[in-house]
Image 1 (cartoon, rainbow, N blue to C red):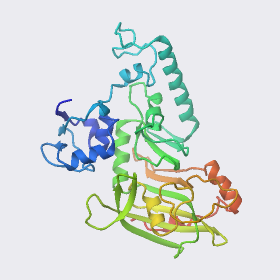
Image 2: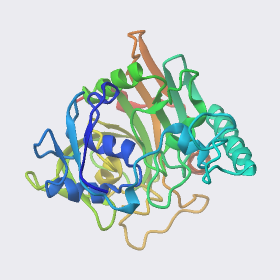
Image 3: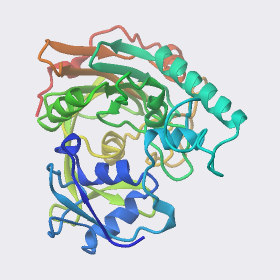
Length: 362
């Protein structure tokens, strides 16, 4: 692949550069992209950029050779014809074209069955829906987007919910694979742009629940650090102000209830939206989330009987202005099964008052 110049379209207005590359080159890893950006091989209108740079329609993105692992994304019809959710009779230049690459009939039928299964699954986890917005109750263990070795994910399944005009529902934000709960989806371009703007301006309020060892002191507080990515371990670390690629992160927390000073149910409100922010912040104050394989750092700690060793983190509630100005969307997700089991064992009442709602918004 030679150096290529791609123009940013109207639909991609205000999209982050890393998201733009994920859309056009879904197999390109974030670490590889970071290296290309850092060395100046990726440029926008001839200038150096960051992965967080936001794009404007008409800008020119310089795409250097990416290697065989990052082939450009196919059109939806081509992707489906290649076995990624194809349905019989769709146009795209593969199925029925006489091409030697045309899929066999059994592949088309299998793809159609997959698409139907994906659509049924997504509809079974809807918490809220109208003509512009979907809020899904994402289960723990399902990735939001694809990556190395990840083939089944919410973003891919959304192909099954394409509208009649061909628009695919779009992710507005992300939550970790092992985090359960509220995931916001835009059903059209207008909603995607407005909801993304609401997230950037911090008009969206997100509340998370977590289970941690011990009882944080004070029982209600603010965690403020800089976070940077540790590429080798795919995790975040607390960094110093001014360190390269370090971003400021702020999280408010409150103890809702505790069990004999040994376990606490926390409610959390992240002001910023950094990768693994809550997980890294709770580990930083020495109360890592129960079942966290990346950040749990207490030696010789034993999991209490009756609790599963799975990440106890729930995207509990999402409050955001409706993209058409029709009031507020306010949706809550129930505890996933493993957390509901832990709440029952510890005697926590999930219906009691949540003190985090009184914490500041910024």
